[in-house]
Image (tube, rainbow, N blue to C red; front, side, top):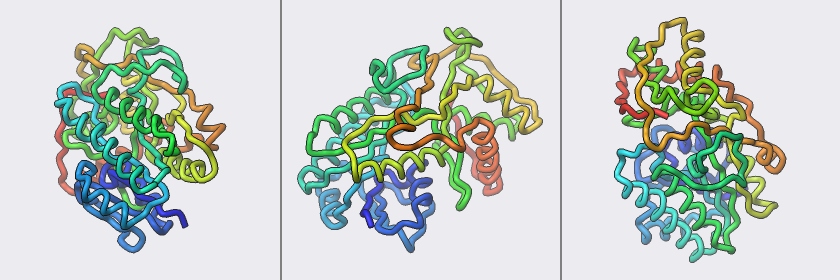
Length: 328
């Protein structure tokens, strides 16, 4: 059985992935914060900051993982966040991880990158498209990609995730950033609470003048990572887009939400923000051909229904989300 280490295991994708892999043995979790939920029978959690070289080396030397799934990152796209947080969590942490991997001769990594590494474009993005990120988050992820790729002793799968949303249902685990900045959870929660939802920008060079995104269900993300594990065992390195395969405007998301909930969605139109791509939709043919992956759960209605279930669960627990004025 392949021994796997997941960094950032307490985050949104990490929590979902660890539970998705709960039937497998030899899964090790590390994060600098404690996990919300995981199966203690099958998993081993170790609290560790990737920037702590001494402890990281000690942990990896003890575990001796065959593959590292590197999810740890500052993942919020927000130009108001101090760029040093992206440097520390996305660049320095990845550099340190690679350094320890090379020292201990660990040579396989699956890296969670992002659509934010791409240049502004109004086409379906292929992996060969120009890489020119416009946000600090995208810049930090591109630097991390380059650090991984330049080490010839490391085999990698770099997964460029587009807009990840939704939740897993057994146990119920979903997206919970504090403050929350993503459109889907904000829209669902505010609609349930009968509050307004901000839409930023009404003059993008798109069909309906709204920004368009490629939503992908977190269940499909977990499937892509699992297929990447099998790919790395037998093949060379790979970079692929992971998205739902269809673009949906922010306004269309709210229209679908209104139909599903039968509630009025109050919209507040604001000026567009610095750093927002008008169109982020990917071509997923490469992932389909080489990984044998395609999305099964990523229709926007499925994502919204799952998000409604998750938001109602949070309300039941009396957990109040904090929101920023920034949404994507």
